[in-house]
Length: 122
Length: 228
Image (tube, rainbow over all chains, first blue to last red; front, top):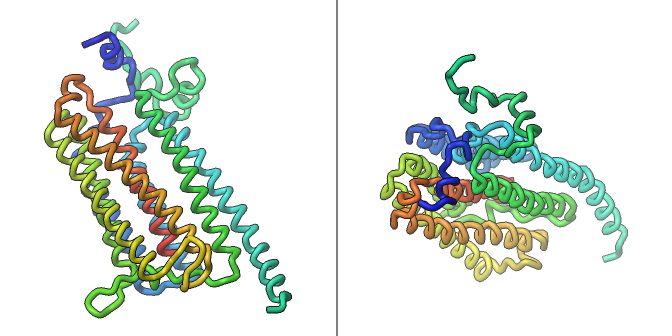
C-alpha cells in the first residue's frame, strides 16, 4: 500500500462514513415496490383520463414522492450530514423560482400572441 | 477529564449547530470522501441543465397558441388490435426503476465488500440501461419514420413538440449510455478485484449516485413530458 492509499484509508479522512450506511436489502426492495406503486398511480392518472389541474397536481405529487425516495434512500441522502444535504438540495430550488416566473410570464405571452394572431389577416 | 476519546459524531452533532460548525470551523466542510462530494456537486449542475430544459419546455408549451400534441395518442403502442397509451414508456420506466433497485443493492454489497455479488449486480444494472436505450431507439425510429415527427414540425399539433422531445429525451438517453459505459468499467474493476486490493469499495457508491440520478431525471421527464 502506497502513501496515498494510506492517507485515503485513514479514518479521520472520512469520519462521516459511519457503519450505519449499511442497510438490509429489504429496505431497498420496499422502496423499489413503492416506486412501482407510485409509477402505477401516475400511469393510472393518464389511463383514466383525469384532466386539468387535478391531473397536473397528481402527476407532480407522485413525481416528487418518487424523487424523494430515490434521493433519500437510494442515494443515501437521508443519512448524510446536514452540511451536504442542504448544499445539494437547496440550490435546485432556484429552478422552482425560474419555473414560477416563466409560468406567470407565459400566460401574458399567450394572451398577446392570441390577440396578435387574431388581428392578422390569414 | 474523561480518558474516553470522544467520537466525531459526539463532538460535532448532525443538527443545525453541527451544520454551522461544518461550514464555519475552517475545516473540511463535507465529511465525506471528495469523490462522493464532487459527484454530488456535478449532479447539482446536471440538475440545472435538465431543470432548465424542462422549464423551457413548460414556457413554450404555455405560450404556443397551437394545441400541444396529445402524448397518450402520439406514444400509444398498437398491441393486439388496440392502442395502449404509453405502453412502451411504462415498460421503460419499469426497467429504469428496476435498474436503480439493483444498483442500490450493488452499493450495499459493496459496503460489505462482496466482490462477485457487487460486480454481477452492477452488470445487471448496466444491462437494464442497455435495454432502456434500445427501447428508446425503437421509440425514436417509430416517431421519426412512421409518425413523421421532426424537430421543426409534426402532424399532431404545435411544431415545437419535436424539438423539445428529441432534445430532452436525447440528452437523457445520452446520460444513460454514458452510465452504461461507466458502470461496465466499474463492474469489470470490481470483478478483477481492484477494490479488494484497495480494501475500499466507495467508487461503487459514487457510480451508484450517478445512476440513481439518471433514474431521477427520468421520473421528471415521465411526469412532465409524457403525462402532463
